[in-house]
Amino acid sequence: MFKNKKVLSLVIVTLILSLVLTACGGNKEIARKNPADTLVVAQGADAKTLDPHASNDQPSSRVIKQIYNTLIFANEDMELVPALAESWTSIDELTWEFKLAQGVKFHNGEEFKASDVKFTFERMINSPSVAHIIGPVSEVKVIDDYTVQIITSEPFAPLLSHLTHTASSILNEKAVTDAGADYGQKPVGTGPFKFVDWQSGDKIALERFDEYFQGPAKVKNVVFRNITEGTNRTTGLETGEIDIAYDIEPIDKRIVTDNSSLELIEGPSFSNEYLGFNTKKAPFDDIRVRQAINYAVDVDEIIATVLEGAGEPAKSPLTDLVFGANNNIEGYKYDPEKAKELLKEAGYENGFQTTIWTNDKPERVRIAEIVQAKLKEVGIEAKIEQVEWGAYLDRTAAGEHDMYILGWTAVTGDADYGLYALYHSSQHGDAGNRFFYSNPEVDKLLDIGKTEVDQEKRLEAYKEAQELIVQDAPQLFLFFKNQNAGQHRAIKGFKLHPAGHHSLYNVTIEGATVEE
Image (cartoon, rainbow, N blue to C red; front, side, top):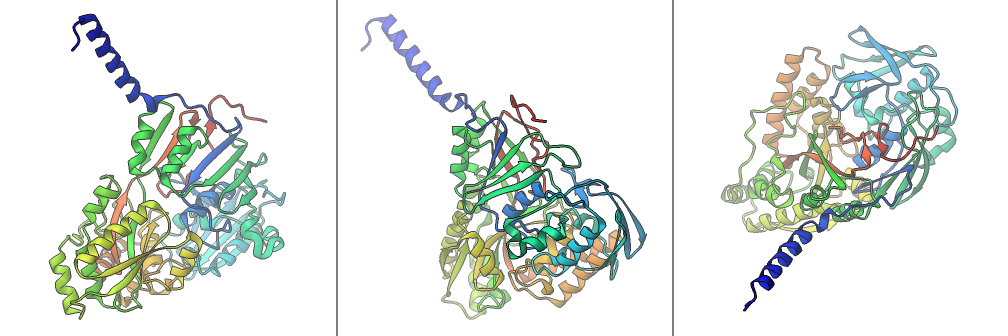
């Protein structure tokens, strides 16, 4: 065909060059489209509220983290370091005393004092969403303006860890009182960024608080964008419109890693994903049905298909990273014949009809579709219903669902937080136990874990509790996965926190100057 060797050589070189250029197409330099002083962060859902006591969801907490401070801060290595409390001392097994930082201001100009700590925790104790985090706290005593004691009704082993939770953020009484029912949309904290504006469903704008007690943040403005579709978050990185995108989808990771203008950050997480059963509703009030579904679903297939292998089966509720995790539980194996046997024993030889609820997070929709297909193979017809995020939380808390897909993060790194809210019978509904699961023996063991100061006895209680929970199967145990974020390479200083609440305080934008 090619008689001239020079022509043939030229064609070959051209083809090779074309392939190289095509392969490098994703490597074109990406220019940031945002102002030099503005950091734009995308996440997969809008915040539900910016009142730390009104919800306990991840999208809200990620914004709350920037606006408020807690008494104690857990850094990325989960070391407890001073925040609004400069030091703390155990007076006795029921009393902790905290010396508070002086000269700290709230965003409304009010000075932070011990009275704010008292107001915050008394308000928190009355919240159905987050009261469980400091449940044993019986009194907060103001010693003077900068000294406060937290007194518990019984020994509370994980207290210090729980005080690092975003729900334990310190509020200003005047700001809460002035805003009334609107406080969740008018938050006031002591944090590095103050609230500016919230365009519901779209974005939340924050501005640097120049009087921040630890020194001003490095960027002037932060904007949280609500971009539900994971691929669209990655596209935003590619177009330069997004600086940091949380939760890059597995199928999009390569797009980020193959572009020299972008960077993929991955790290460990305390999170687990599950499909929960409403154990108060038939047929999920039958343990055999719940166990059958655990046998009917191939979790390895979900991990391979949805996560592209970037996860591990959750044989129990806690990842090994969490204090108190039971590593010896074998969990459920994929065994559809065993599932059919259990369904027959429970009187559902011909299956039944039910629903799987999910929010519109694409990953969860794909999980629901795989579960739906697997359940059909054992005779269960499951209809998938997508529910808007805020309504999803409200309606599952009210127990309207049959099955639902959600995740839980053991934020404090302690088994108490990873287990108590989800499985203790006192926590039904909004607090976390959306299974409406009850087992008196599990309650007893979780109470021991919460109050026992002997670490070995705590571990033993949690070990037994997890064995019972897995046996009772209030959920389909899905997977643990690493967390990630994609960012433009101009962004420096961003770190993933294992709790999923990432601080933006130390983030800088290369080439931008800090305004003083």
